[in-house]
Length: 278
Image (cartoon, rainbow, N blue to C red; front, side, top):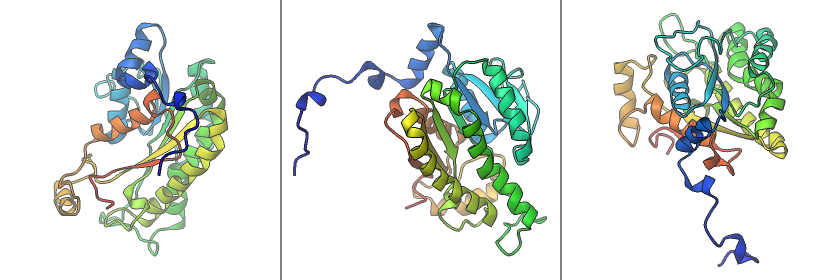
């Protein structure tokens, strides 16, 4: 059965150049022309966040970062890193108005092209085991949800005008643990990531009329400081590609979702797990 396309001219001819070129090189070209995109990245100090900041910086983006730790210039060699870093505990929602005000001050009226909500916590027991729905304290539930779910809501809403001015992109970092019981991720973490996936759909619907796209990525097992060799060895047999992923591989998908190459993508949750979700 054919597609109902009443006007063949709509699909004839070459696509616009912005769709054909490499998005990474396109952003570099804008930088040479005096146009620099800006992003706010939470949880930028290590792992996926650190790899994301490096990749965007190499493409010429301005990185405004926030994390619980102070800026480490030796590990984070992107331009204006120290000046554009805000040390803040996102699990304390009362700190978010101050963070939003500081981001606006740094932007000084300029648009915000991307918001990447990467920060997240998954508390363990004192022995390093997962916290279940029976063993997680009320305080831990609240702390996890404040950071993993409430912070993305408030940051996106607080920076809405700046995102709208850029027809920007929001990327929420969820997890494979949000769709299945995970052997190591705790119940509060998994539940918060499932809620964040649902929130992504709601935000995509709400923000689309203003030209702002909202998507999520759902990483599986990624080689970071938190993944021990023993844990990796136990997980790999359950991954069809028979290996864990790298932070760089996740960062590249985030970059795609924030680029013009994904200009018609919104409301998606992209699994990055080597087929582990199959």
